[in-house]
Image 1 (cartoon, helix red, strand yellow):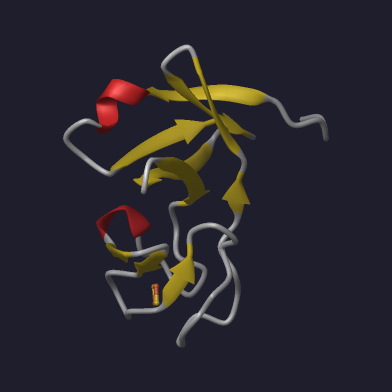
Image 2 (image 1 turned 90 degrees about the horizontal axis):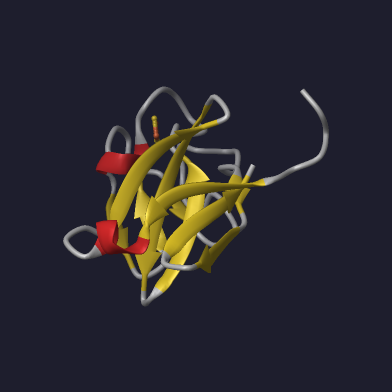
Length: 105
Ligand code: FES
């Protein structure tokens, strides 16, 4: 596996018509793409605290809450905002091109 990152298509924009989120597997990574206020954010879908999938988390503003123990993270930076998480989530760059959402992996 090289160190160079590349853009990978994650979803079509139309897939966010009925939902604010989509879980995708890109290059072996479990990624959650979120649409918030018209912009796309991509975070690692697995909580940094223990094993829980963030796709089931409550989103408020730019914060997502882990469905298992309630740690909150900023989806823009991945920064952990509340316990019990003590580590950030990985975040990935996103872009939109020709009606598709790309994630930089
Ligand atoms: S698994 Fe997410 S806060 Fe514990």
